[in-house]
Length: 122
Image (cartoon, rainbow, N blue to C red; front, side):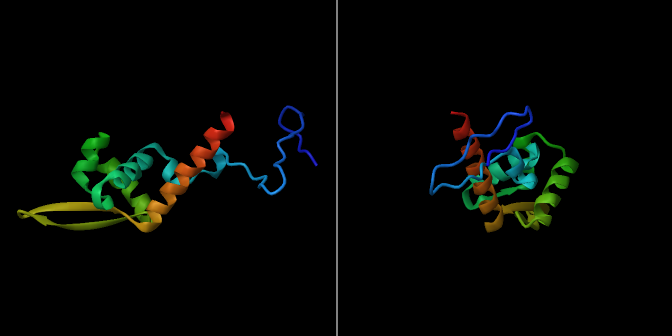
């Protein structure tokens, strides 16, 4: 049975036999990653050797303040997408941020959903 859309038209996008009828949409994007700054952080970490970067490097590359970066890192850490390690280099405190396996999986899923949405447009 076809669903009526917002304008009253029926949705004739039924999938062929053997294919799923579930279509990706903006609503299916991971809300934790979707926010612009967090997407930048996760994208940057995913591209780094070892999927790790120092706080100051992330801050500089994304042009963020300490507070703004810290706030977004907290959200990502609370969702187990990143791990934060603190230490010292030449007696100076340093903070390293690492993308976790869960974070990498979530990022790959986010990218896959975007790719599916783009294919629907083509």
